[in-house]
Image (cartoon, rainbow, N blue to C red; front, side):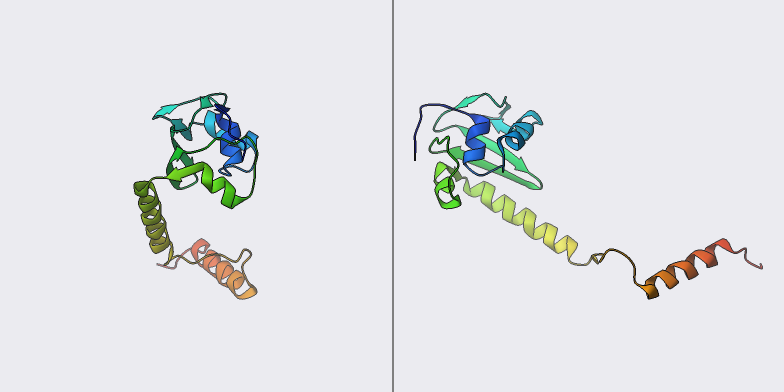
Amino acid sequence: MPDVGKLRLDKWLWAARFFKTRSLAKSAIEGGKVHCGGERCKASKEIRVGDQLQIRQGFDQRSVEVLQLSDQRRGAPEAQLLYRESEESIAAREAAAAQRKAQGAGGQISDGRPSKKQRRQIFRFRDERNTPSAD
């Protein structure tokens, strides 16, 4: 793995497989989703080994330490050697995922379009609401 002294943040995030493209990494950085040392930074910020990064991806918040620098995108096992996620970050992510799973367990996921039976029920419900009552 090529090791360089300093590297652009967006390029490292792409090489470490946090984002699929450098432009997505750059957009995330500009959108305030990536913090270096607790502060917002630019995509062109040069990071070094030992820097602490906070990365938000969707619902997940990761806190990682840069262990190695690489400007080449390689396989996932090699990319995981570039950083170390803190134990607190892993625990918080797993707890948040479990909570989201527990909250979503009772909800019914729609299959898209309603079936013929469901359409009839919708029409019947709508017609009952629109007809004036005989009170």
